[in-house]
Image (spheres, helix red, strand yellow):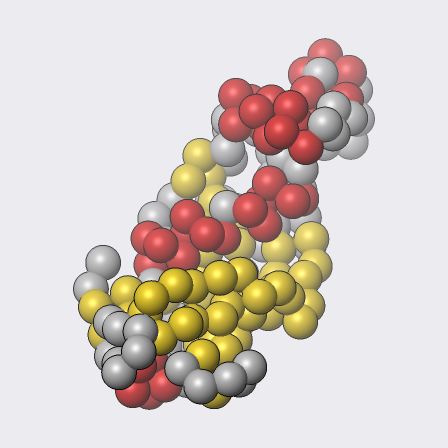
Length: 156
């Protein structure tokens, strides 16, 4: 991914959206997430029982779809030069719009809403509108306003 300056990041506000590559959500990924979070609800991990639901198959946890935002952002968002550390700062809004069925491919679409100094000198709060699209589906998996905090290197 390319590198931009903090000023170039600020210039992205209101600009064109950027899309990540497609990520496949297979049963193995769902099962590993279920084990990590101890959420073994049958609609996620039991294909036989899940086949009898309106979904017709297993579906990804909503939080699995949300957790993929980091990988999607790394793939689509330019690196900001002079950043010592970046952390997830949370969400202003997060909605799970439609399920992600096993085998589906998803991608993130990011649009920068704001970049402002916050929380002390050398810190930038980045607010992005995010949509996780499901390939071939009309409705997205999720919509969010995602916040990230960038800690700039001293002197950057």
